[in-house]
Length: 438
Image (cartoon, rainbow, N blue to C red; front, top):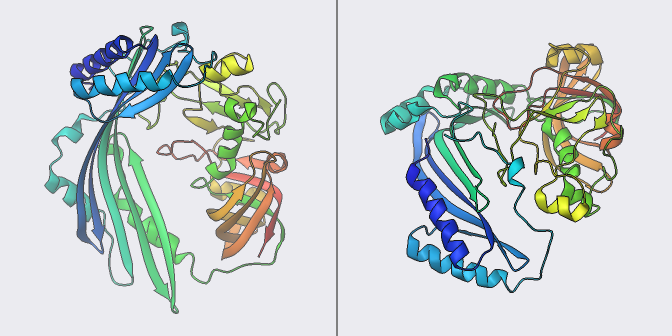
């Protein structure tokens, strides 16, 4: 839970900001604590404990704006910091588009910080010995494994957002994580596989299965190489499918639109995507990591269609960009974007492979880039050739190239297998006639 002393600290810091000459201000207090146990080949390799606190300010004075941050939170240091910061703001050019959000748009329901059930009080009682035991219990190191590098961690994040217009929003969240990379050697070649899990509640963390999944992924790569270049159906595993969605979300950001740095300029209300693509923002899923009731301005989040049946329904517009572009404000970014299943629910990776028949299953991207203005992309990939709906051989050392607008128009299917532990709920995706080269 949020310490009442932290709320009072933020309130006092805003009073200081106004005393220093700010007409309006927003303060954001972030506190985090993490305990980590790293293992190497089934033995403890490293134990760390990290604590971090910072107080960030958005300051408005004389039609000018500046943002500042400090980790010195005692009253004397805060006063010196804010006095200096306001003086700096007054040297900046005026920008009348800068302002706090309308309080009527801001969240009034984040009162305790745990309305979404993201905090597990179990973390407070975990001993160092228990952390070490959990990290060692998750290890699968044995003969035939060249190396195993694992990390168990648990952490807590707390946020207080308050402004001089009366907004007060609290958020707290715990996270329990385990990830492991396993390397094997076969015929003089080394192959590595990685798997991870994360949950807001310790009971939901499945650390024990991560090692076996990582080992299976490393073994599956044995004998990998390039196949003949050409056009293939492409299935993108849910573990990496956000690579296909994140550029779309960035292109819908109002800052990108305003800078003409987006391939989706003037797309609002239009249908640049196929009917099968629907992306919802679902920020209030209880118990799921990254759910949140408000954005960094304190604006209330809500279940909202981003793209519905191919139509762009929303840009991400913060207060500044709203004034700059003369359009209605929304939230500054998608909180929990989810691609909905299509053409039916219940499709997993294996079902989508059968639908596609033949092609390349992409399980990892390694390098490459995309052009935010044109939507063109080129990525290195690893994965598998599949034939008649079944994986036939591992693939590596190839490039996939194309354009996001053209790619999405060739959508074959979107699965129903997004991982709840990921910040973006993106399932397995399939596209037709995609260019691959060796």
